Image 1 (spheres, rainbow, N blue to C red):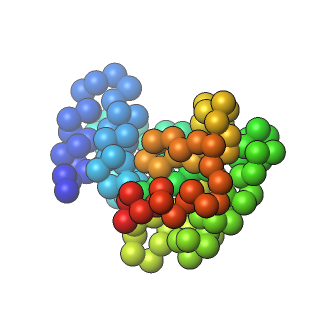
Image 2 (cartoon, rainbow, N blue to C red; image 1 turned 45 degrees about the vertical axis):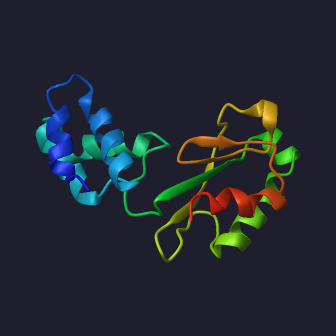
Length: 148
């Protein structure tokens, strides 16, 4: 695994590079380590508050540890009407965690998302940004098996 300090160095001379650095760190770690915020602030010559603000502003960025495979379920009205609640129940049952939690083995995290842009195939989840649509509770075990 690459050190987040090295990742930040790659982007520190690019205008707006802090967002790109955070994306690269998250791709490597699945989250942004707390310590990376201070390193990014120094590298990009901004306050720690500003560096934290960038990392916390975007919903797809996550500060602090979470499961490696991030499962997001759309909580928009179309997904809700199409049965998102039943899919959430199936995910929670299959993984043994609740929304907002990560599995003890660090393999999965469950999070809500606003619209993921797949309204033609509701309800929708994404796993590491890959969409899975037209879901039913019965489809969940096979989808999760791809990542176990």
